Image (spheres, rainbow, N blue to C red):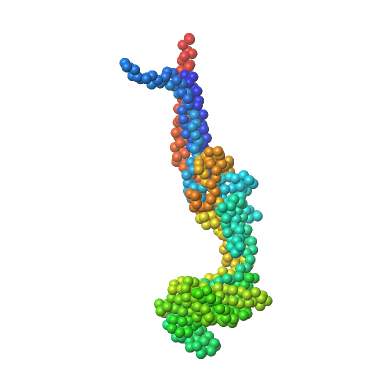
Length: 464
């Protein structure tokens, strides 16, 4: 009977632990990124009353006689399955869909969390606003060509978003064309004066128009805007002439590097000849001295600006030979259009966004978009082996394995969803069911104790 008392006490203690875990789960039902836990029991050591015996010639074997001495907690398991994602529309709220943890730092100490509730502090650091721990990743650095680059092979560092930082002006290095020249128009004879040619190109009646003008605003290295114009007119069957002009430019010229590698610059030349196949595909470009008829058909515009003796260059990207990705010649309306150039004036970073790989991109007032950095994720061989440290954080333990740091989508790491938070994975229906089972288990153990007590009372009553 004394064994019953102690077995019942162990049952009460174990069910109390289970109830503690259930209560903790329920209290964190609305805690972002919380991972629920469960308690597993196992029997305690058993007292051997008699051992087993093997079969003999005249009798069979006898099993051992053992009396259990109660139960004990076997484990408290973390349930690391995915929680539902809740939309917040806040760009610094991040949720992981799949495996992995965000990495936070408090000085040299590293913490890991599924809670992606982040914000930007006054110095631009991405932090957990509850405790100030800084989100880890890789900040972008500029390479020798001025383009931002993220080195994910380096050690992680505190991520910074430099809101309202200046972005210096960038001079235009290329202009890309996506256009069509109407093959149905009549050619303009070579002897027509420049003034008459411009009238024919700009005729108010579209039916009489024999060419088109396209213009694109380009920028110098100080961000000053200049208008680059290209006059195009039909000069012969499947041939068009393009004349380049630029506001404020001096010593303007245009030349082509031929397919043979030759580059004979003709000072003051501002015209190009575009050749087309009968089916309307661009096949060649020539500056009168050199011709290019394969691969990318580009031309270089060279010029100087007042007050700056340096020669500036802009590449005209007209298309690929034999393709329809650039300038074409079909019997359709003129759509001569320069669709892209890479220059801009000085601007300030006004906003930023984070994509599903954790890449942070700054959006500037001048229309520029630059990579600022990338969010790091961590995973472990045994995530259930992590130790909870409070504030929705985990730390490594000797059984979790070392952190495997990487980017979203690599080495089994999940995707990052900006504007979402991961909700707790606590299932209230399961918790309330477990609560009933735990209550009944606790109640049954208390009954075994009271029953054993009554039996002891009966034993003591034998003396009377």
